[in-house]
Image 1 (spheres, rainbow, N blue to C red):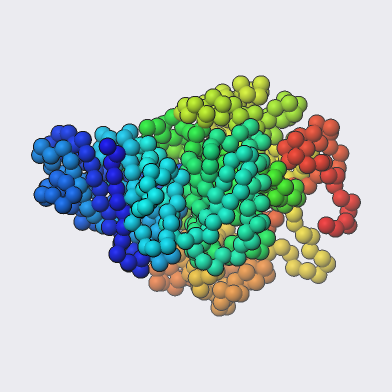
Image 2 (image 1 turned 90 degrees about the horizontal axis):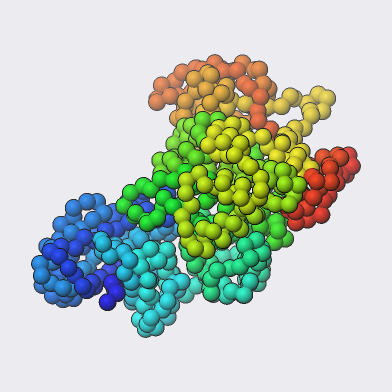
Length: 593
């Protein structure tokens, strides 16, 4: 007998779910129910048990009460006596429209099982079923086998599959397409989206086809894109047969915003292979109650990020120029992160639980995002493999070997094993690069990587015209212009602000004794080129004080990849094989796009 949960509610306007659970084959004097504290793909402890309320138990539905003791934040112990069956009833607070959320509104019910349906300790390998009791006219959608139509009931072969299968209920817009021989469903949940349905289907199909060309197959018989449209975007979360994204309802226009949407969609779809099937051995079996550490998240997420963007180019959804522009933006962000020198990719992966998902004012000084640097390192590895193998192999070959040997059989990848697989797949010894850029903190040479493909990576600075002011100086700080006063949010290591003793939270009100409204702050710095001495008047924890600071040179606002004047035949071949587009020579001086 499967473990069965029934989910319903009195009113969709009241964000509270009524859940009942029925369990047979009870053995022993007690049963522990445990609710996860995190979900795969989102590496931070969120303690979902805070939203589970008033759990009660009986020896059968409507039967005699049984004692319930909460023995940990996420664990309820039920004394069963000799009863072979057990029933529970509880309430879930459901007001969280985020990627790993539970949300009930008059428009829909978005249900992530990990946040609402506890597992029976010791019985995670058994089947779990979910039955939905919904208002008239609502439908239920999940990438699980439907074992009953009315009321809808879905069956997961075990708890891991249940956790990996979000359920959405309501009246979404349903789109769909076939790509690579597989039907794909697109569900748009929420009103007011500015999307064009046919274009959405066509472009997502091109992403699927590009992914299938890389791996040679799509290992599914169906797939669902869940898009939840709202006013507070949250990003996406991958699942084994679907992905769920929470997006701004107007994200589909203008074109720059739409391309960010495609990037999220491509990233999450690539996870179908990388993370959902090619995954660290240390994650298995899943322990949902505590942090599970791996040094491989840079590959799981950073390499996925690299291919998410690259496959948009290969699918024809980004021009070569636009792709290189986006890659250059990542390079600038990397160069503006002091923590790239402090923490390796492996350590950043290992400490994701307390770093990436825990915003901190000093975070960029102590670490680097494994998404960001992992993306750039994956690109650099691709360029180096193509160069050393004379363009006979590439990172594509590494991904295909990972799929064949680890993903398809779902065999966990050992810590530090990527370098060995890369060597076998390409015939190139990359031990030095992994030691320097993955395990170490050596500065990633973006210019050298660019040259492998006949490109130059450099800052694009405009030379001031005669009589124009010199380039604006820099304080090495960040502030939020939308919050009113110039309140410092970040002070970068090695910058003028750090040397002068500025701190996050300082509120700058004047420069050289002249009041500076927030809107005029950038203009004031524009009149202070590098080497200018300034007196900043600021409030620190309520006290007015002055700080003397000398401005420094600003990091260029823009970096770019441009073709070199005289590329070699190998460099041109690498460019063509990488971006799947003909080589374009540098435009003559004065030429325009």
